[in-house]
Length: 87
Image 1 (cartoon, one colour):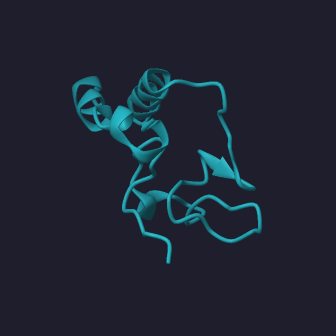
Image 2 (cartoon, helix red, strand yellow):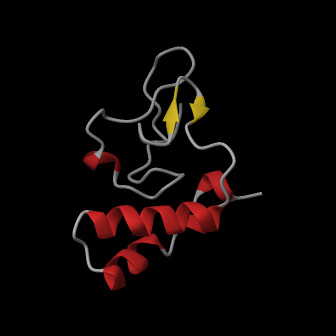
Image 3 (cartoon, rainbow, N blue to C red):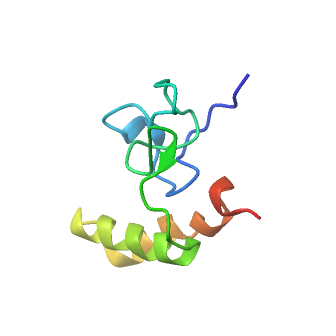
């Protein structure tokens, strides 16, 4: 049985905030690990990106959503520690 994650293991977004309810696996089933912004049809939407680049991308997206940069940086601090980025 696949573990259910509360946050996307690529970008850290709360899964309950994903308007599509999660990404999709190659068989069309919902991914319980990644959001729809990061994972579609069994593949990552951003393939050539580092954890630090993803962190910066997430901070900018949150700032666009009118979240103060200080809070955005705080929320994005865990990105390099998520499952996608573990070696």
